[in-house]
Length: 115
Image 1 (tube, rainbow, N blue to C red):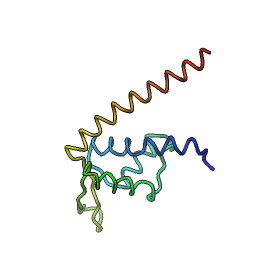
Image 2 (cartoon, helix red, strand yellow):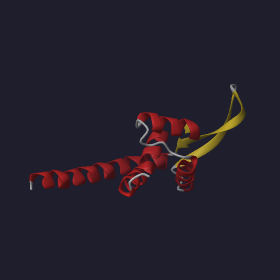
Image 3 (cartoon, rainbow, N blue to C red):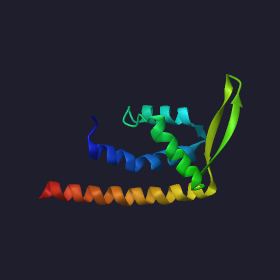
Image 4 (cartoon, rainbow, N blue to C red):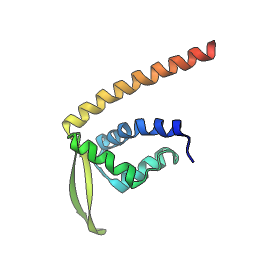
């Protein structure tokens, strides 16, 4: 069983990471899950029940949009997600917030080490 504190940390950054990747390039759900798992060394090994609600919420907030695409190697269409202009702006804002948050927490932790 995963530590509850660790779960909360992951939950807090997932939307940031998902939007970041979609802002980098259009992607589809399975590809996004694989990328996050591989890039994080397995730390972000998301279940569909975790990823898709994030995607739906980002879409409802008009930060991303989706479209179905047929590919030659697959009979079933894939749902691709891409960032909107508002999504790119929001991601820049979230990056700044993350940087401030991370620096502040690090400052507290460094201060605790010096006590």
